Amino acid sequence: MGLMSKILGEGGSTRRTEDYVELNADAHEAAATEADVQVRIARIGDKQDVIEIKDAVYDGDIVVADITRHSTQDRTMEHISDELKQVANEVGGDIVQKDDDQLIITPAGVAISRERLGA
Image (cartoon, rainbow, N blue to C red; front, side, top):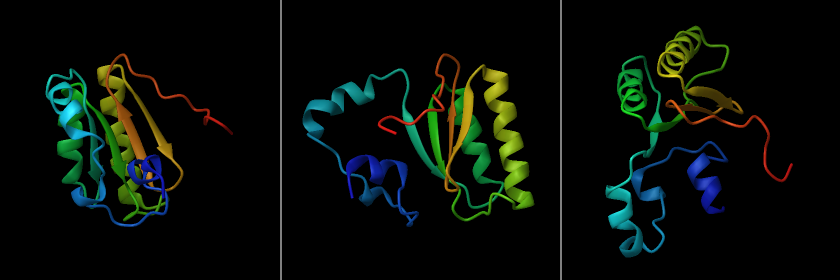
């Protein structure tokens, strides 16, 4: 499994902090703490999880949220998606669902291309 597969969750298994691989952490540690925008990884288990995601997007971060615990036809997931769409709209950002397992929500100034690279 490649690095992007681990980040973007190909395979749909449960992810933990230990699952992410830091590459040459010494060289990038200073840059990461000085970054204006962070990519945050989240898991949506219930409606409460949406609060932290909304706060992160309002703060200007990009959020990749794992939604594998919900069916895309699930009424709870519809409500969560609507809330996150509203947040993306309010901040002038973007939101897209990647396959059936992830939502990507961005703040103002960050658009998500709907075309896959190398496809």
